[in-house]
Image 1 (cartoon, rainbow, N blue to C red):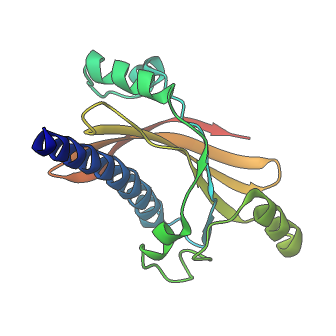
Image 2: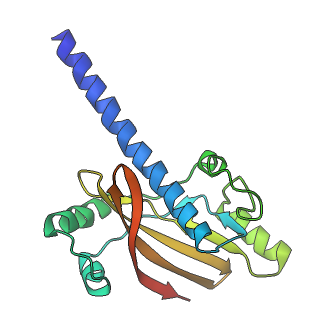
Length: 178
């Protein structure tokens, strides 16, 4: 009985680590991807918004052939998403200079507003939603928004797939601007 309990605890802790590791890996992948797209001089928002996913949007806006099972899992798991905060430690692990990421600390909403007020010019504050995974942690969707100043923003969603153990951006969709 005791051995069974240890095995169950080990499996639970391994599964929890795997989930958290995937969240961190997706965060890093998206920041890296944005920097590769010549998005430089960014600040990163601490706010992790609740994720949203609509399988019909993905189907209509991309040419991806994703199984209905995976799409249903993503849609269901998005309903379980929560608000939260990103850890600034993830930013320091990225190892980008200040030309790319302006601060190694993520910004709260209040700090972002103070930055807008102080600089009096356009800023690039990137905010990432909580990633939504399928049940096997092989596919993921995440939303990204760029806040330029109060009332001005744009964003989109990414579909990622784990290929040979590495999260890879497959498509983006749901682009918007305000």
